[in-house]
Image (cartoon, rainbow, N blue to C red; front, top):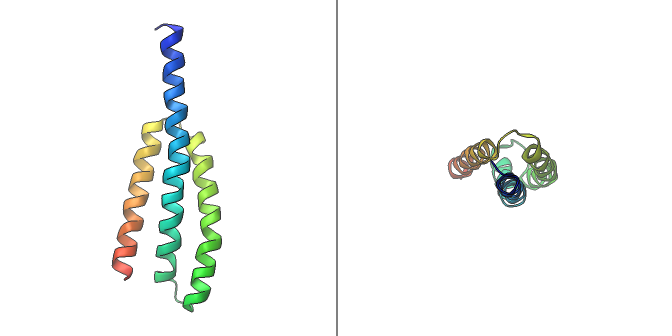
Length: 94
């Protein structure tokens, strides 16, 4: 392959990781903050507080994971599965 196609492939890979870190990371942390209070056996206000604080940690971990995983396809697959699991948790928790 030429240097131009390698450069383009690298740009696409980095762009996919940045979009996953920002968009999917936000979606996962949002759903986590919505699902956790439904399942914690403590007062609702305390559960919301703990879930909100934990969502910052979750978001940071996803951003780090986005640039630590070998493949962008693996990243998107895993984040999609986590989003689906959290959607199911929210659905069944209501």
